[in-house]
Amino acid sequence: MLMPEKLDVRWARCGEDRHWCNLLTLDLDPVKDKEGVYIIWNSKEDRNVVYVGQGNLYNRLEAHKTNDEIINFSINDYLFVTWAIVPEKYRDGVERYLIEHYKPFLNQKLPKTDAIKVNNPSNRHGT
Image: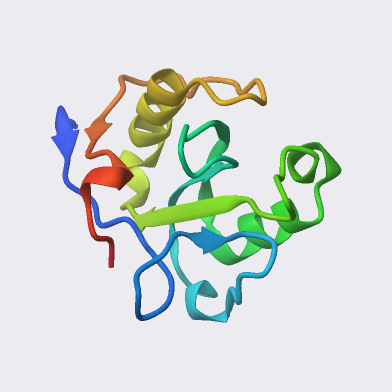
C-alpha cells in the first residue's frame, strides 16, 4: 500500500475560545468512539512534549490522566493535550513522525514504518 508523505490533520482544541485542552480536567465523553493520534505537553510557551500516542482516544487519554509518570510533568496541575482523527492505516507513520519531530520526554518506541509528516498543531485552529 502506498503511504502519503504528508497528511493535513485537524488538531482539536477546547471551548468557544479554542484554547488548548487540559488533560487533567478534560471531559473525554465527546471522544468516546474516536481514534487517532495525540500529543501531551506541559509548557504553553516551549511546547515541551511529554508523550505522543495513538489509538482509542478515550481509553488512552483516560489512562494517562492517572499515570504518575506523565502527571509528574504537569506544571500547576496543567498538561496540554490535542488530538487528531487519523485513519488506522496511517497512525503508525504519523506517530513515528511526531515522536521524531517532538522528541517527547518519555522515551517511546518508534513504530516500524516510514514517518508520515503532519501539520504542526500550533499552525492550525483545530476542529
